[in-house]
Image 1 (tube, each protein chain N blue to C red):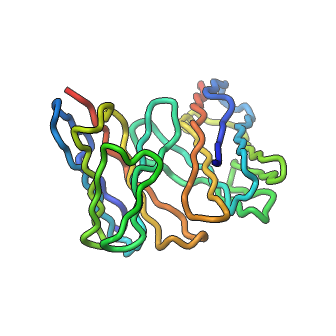
Image 2 (cartoon, helix red, strand yellow):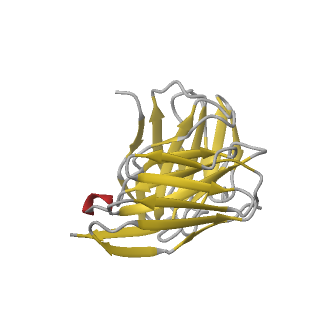
Image 3 (tube, one colour):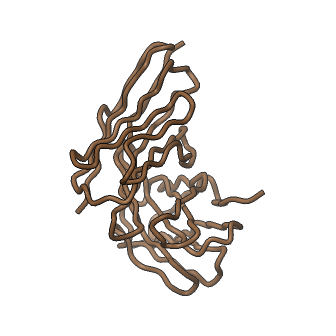
Length: 114
Length: 112
């Protein structure tokens, strides 16, 4: 089965804690993305990566960090500096950064603060 | 900076009704526009993608139109069914980059 797998589906964070959301894809895609979705709002781009060992900040990168050590993996860490982390997080991937390429989405991780 | 707006925010209709969802964007220099469906607590499923040179795309009971010069797109759903209940998002891809800008979505409820 080809696709994008996000885990866990639900995650809880304690005050001052860093948590990491997993995103894995077996589509052999070069580009990967992380979005945040708040109730009644559209998706906002946190970070994206065009290729292994390279990533760029999106519109709301503060309080988040990422790594891209392997092509198939793009984990997102929500740090203690992110004061309002409760949201639905979506990972996506595309073949590359070419304009023609369509983004495919995972099923999401819902993060809540304890 | 591109801004995408969707109207209405929520819509409730009886089964069988034809309906229109609206999407507007501020910068007409787009590469394409995409409509997505999102079920509660789930990821996004792509419904239709319209290139900037196209006027409309159709898939089954869905028809999406694009008027790039006026910065508008509509998603027409014919003969709505309870299974169509979901949030519908539109997103535009700028002509200068591969990033998507999303609207806030329209939450659709189709009542049996």
